[in-house]
Image 1 (cartoon, rainbow, N blue to C red):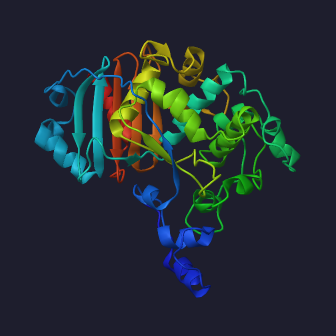
Image 2 (image 1 turned 90 degrees about the vertical axis):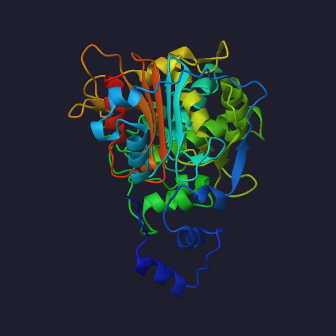
Length: 385
């Protein structure tokens, strides 16, 4: 369920004379309170333009998939629609063998409506990193300090970008709504580059996994810096448009929230906003090994690495749950004889779930998770497909 800023904190900010403006950190904390799927309209953003060539999605409607794959009470359209409404679902899309099997919207949402993807943004960033790595301008083996100049903390400068991509960097990261903790300070910052330079460690890099948001932001900072060595005016949103969104054949433009207008930095950990149908295309891109429109959009070896299971004993391979996290993508628990399933995972139950054996891409977006384990549910749908 959603975090809320405690009433006492809000009262404290009011007493301190902080207004509801959004051009200061505390102003954003007070005016926006807690993250939600609509806050993208109240934050500055940069467009991610699509191109003239759209990848068509052939329709192959399957009226029986619910009866085959879902529990009896939700096995009919009426039952599933009631379940979706009850769980805060706003979009639900299934692609099978690259064809559109089902597409449903709820709560006033529409195909042409924007959806905030939250941490699905990280998997978009991963694709961009892989493209840039193939260009030779950045690598998992690089140090953060190789790209971001002037970091005074030597330990931070020495962190490998691969450790950031796998969230094993060891950073201190306190969650919760209190405004002095890292989670809200990162989310509402009006100068993320400056804030990232203050990052501190709680553990030795490479020894523990933590699903924190500082690491992907630092990946974005490093990628932006690498791009600007070639073009001082380069932006992450512009790179995403030219090298990913347009070659992907997206049907609609997207946008990326930034920390402040002008030369602000993209909020690569949570700020990518797109249409659900294009997020399904992105999932299909990874199912197809990075190919779209007959073109290798994301390098095949980068897609394969992102989908692969890390070695036993590394902290981003979760032995107890037998899942993993690699290159800003999640790996589902493994089943013997099954090709590794993987997914992009966002707050409030946002998912792009990919099953290579069943040739399935399932997108679920919502205003809330509805207290549903969406990874498990989508896995059960795939099991019975």
